Amino acid sequence: MKTKEENHAVLISIVSVVTFNSLFLSANGIFMLVAPAVWYDAVPGVTDTGFFNQHFIRDIGIIQLFLGIAFGLGMARPDRRVGLWSAATLWLCAHALFHFWEVAVGICSPSAIPRDFPAVTLPAIVGITLTLWAIRRARSGNTSFVHGRRHLSRQARGGIS
Image 1 (cartoon, rainbow, N blue to C red):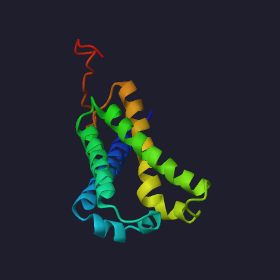
Image 2 (cartoon, rainbow, N blue to C red):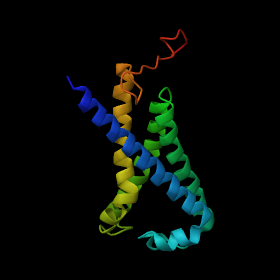
Image 3 (tube, rainbow, N blue to C red):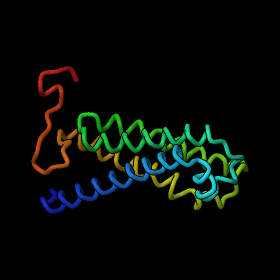
Image 4 (tube, one colour):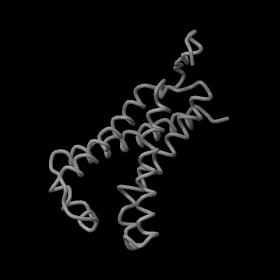
């Protein structure tokens, strides 16, 4: 069994990673919405994927912002965490797999994999890790980030689960 100190360290790590993922995704989304041309020129590899299209960049910016918000809301709303983080992670994984597929079929060179890792693959891996942690935590009935504090499930409060 883990000690209180180990549990506390894990929770601090989880909160830190969720906060980073949420802020990174939200900031990237806002950047894409506010300055799509600057984003297009500033992010490595983007200019290699096709011509500038501010509408498309802003579409993806909205998605990135929603993903960041989903991770943030999941941290604040334990009763919604698994659903929010699962949905966000599903998109992040599909996006990362699409980048790998582009390499596999020859659209992009293998050099795209390490180039895209920090902004594409890493958020998906982080999302998977956080979502699995949230699922495990929800199954144990302890969804709070605060040690010792309990949130009752809807079923435990007498509602429908």
